[in-house]
Image (tube, rainbow, N blue to C red; front, side, top):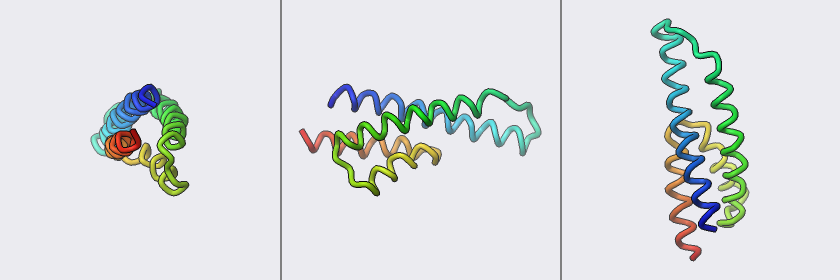
Amino acid sequence: MNKALTRFRVVAYIAGVVLLAFCVEIFVKYVLKGPEISWFPQLHGFVYMVYLLVGFDISRRVKLTFMQTIGLLLAGTIPVMSFVADSRIRRRAENLR
């Protein structure tokens, strides 16, 4: 369980940082008329796919309900929510021990 929790924490942190950076890139591109970073959407998509796999794995290990699992997986699409999800999953995993 510890390795799965560590995996999720690392991936959730990376997904959160990449999503925040992607939001900044979109703001710069459309509001400030700055340059486009053409590879950034693909990076975000790849990181989110990894987040989905690791998130589903940890949701089964900590015995989340179907709706909690959906919420956990969707947390990777909202800036900062992956950090909140990481905190909640960590607390839940500690309560299972």
